[in-house]
Amino acid sequence: MTMPQRGNSGDVWLTPKHIIDALGKFDLDPCAAPLPRPWETASASFVEADDGLSQEWFGRVWMNPPYGRGIGAWMKKMAEHAKAGGGGISLVFARTDTKAWQDYVFPYAKRILFLQGRLRFHTPDGLPGKDVANAPSALIAYTIDDALALSESGIPGWIVEPVKQLKG
Image 1 (cartoon, helix red, strand yellow):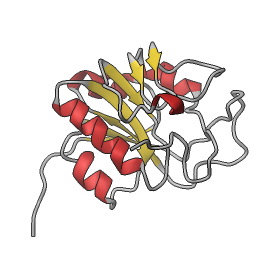
Image 2: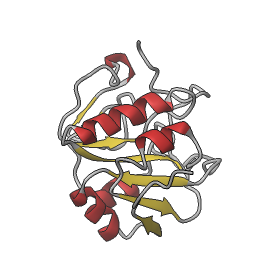
Image 3: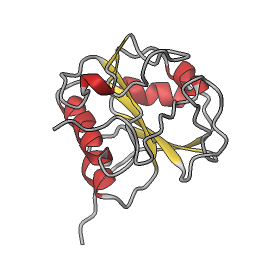
Image 4: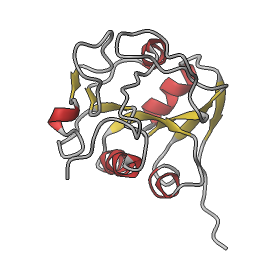
């Protein structure tokens, strides 16, 4: 099933360049903005027409998925990539109560950076959007190397390490 690479609004919002620059090089962005784009997020990318969700992922992945009802499928794919030995970092809203976070973030994340304040995503021409994100955001690291990249990034926020699930 093809999952759109746009959020519920249909708009395309880019990760601010300073976030990408602070985290180092990525091999793949499976949900990249369409061309032309003002900056690259990875050496290789899949745009909406490529259906990144159905493609094979490789290397260190940067994932800022389309926000909306389909986000769980993207988060699941990232968790599967991590489980298979792949690395990467995801940028998603910090909605820790959701099934996607409970099933695909906490069990797989090595470290999570809850960003200070709210991000201002950028428009496809590279300009900051007029509004800030409507929810707080988090960067999720899936390997020890990615966790180290978060710690050394200088991006303001709080870093946590998932330790153990408590069941009632």
